[in-house]
Amino acid sequence: MTGQGPRILVTLPDVAQPADGGKRLRCAGVLRGLAAAGRVDLAVLFSTAPEGGDPVPPGVEVQRWLRVQPAPRGRVAGAATALARRLPVHVGAQRWDVVEAELGPWLAEDYDLVWFGGLDHARALHPVLARRFPRARWVVDCDDVETEKWRAYLEAGSGGRVERVQRRLELPLWQRIQDDVAGWADAVVVCSELDAQRFGTGPVAVLPNTYPEPASVPPPPAGEHPGAPVLALVANWGTDQNVDAAGWGAREVLPAVRRLLPGARLRLVGREAHRVAELADLPGVEVVGPVEEVGTELAGADVVVVPMRYGGGTRLKVLEAFAHRRPVVSTTLGSEGTGAVDGEHLLLRDDAAGTAEAVARLVKDAELRDRLVDAGEQLYRDRFRPAAAVTAVGALVDRLLPGAG
Image 1 (cartoon, rainbow, N blue to C red):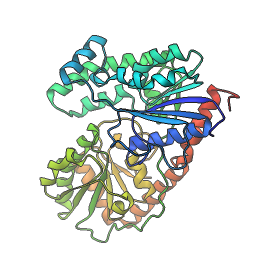
Image 2 (spheres, rainbow, N blue to C red):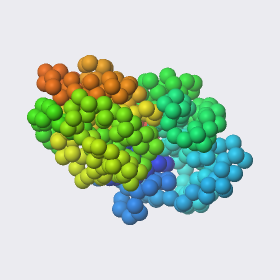
Image 3 (spheres, one colour):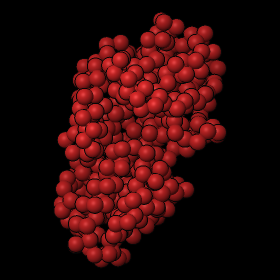
Image 4 (tube, rainbow, N blue to C red):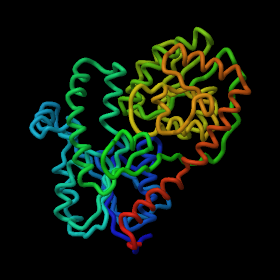
């Protein structure tokens, strides 16, 4: 919609191309929806993607874009800044002054809508931008409800002692940010109805995570080698919750599976694989790293496992498996936000022994496997294809800016 519609400034926490992970897939969905609704200026903040290349998905038009990715303050300086400003360390350590300077030439514009791609963006930039754009409407994408994510982290016993103390101290700081954002935002966007309930007060709207429809879906291999199944866990290993899932899956779940199916293997697929490299020393664990086409990797998997113990949003790992017609065994938390039902779309187990039993059952029971795969694919097609994000974003923009298009 270049040249018409409302003027929109959007900040995203990562590039939207290549869409090779959950965060980037959500960025792509948001950007597609906003570009269809108006004229977009895009700022990508603190992405770890290599510099160079267009961060915008093919077929999506924006007026202009920039990337700002200054190195954060050092550990001591970052902690001191966070303490002085009563912020979580992650927020206090980032160089928001550099972001403001890079955005400077855009501040002469008159935006109708500002869409922040995270609570940290909103907390740091809203005070500055609100002075520049007093008539703008404000949207904050809270794809993770931070308070819930870190409560689950603490309940799971993840991390070391120092980090656990830090996360416990930061919980009220995240709550303070969420409460503040709820007070001034015109809409707080979350991934699911469950997250909407968890966020609590404020003008909350649901924007589902989506997954692109595979060009082709090869037939499943499950059952061909019932004694030596391949388990796949696909994730961006740059996030702590995924590293935790890989560690629990490799150290607890896989040994339990191998007691039932001695030849079972667990393949860890995804970028930033150096963070899980040490797991390759464990029996049956294969650290694959990034792949050009995840569908090819999933084609060789008998079962997709999602052993998440904390995190937020909708688990795209589950949607990805559904789209590729692969059976799934997940923790309850691992399937949150998808609407998937235990025994109908997948099998849910929250302990290593139960997960192993479920994997063995899927490998051996073709009728159950086929029934779950059919239902999972239908759930994906009904609710989580990319058009769902475009529709949800368009509806929200129309509600906030009636008649602007």
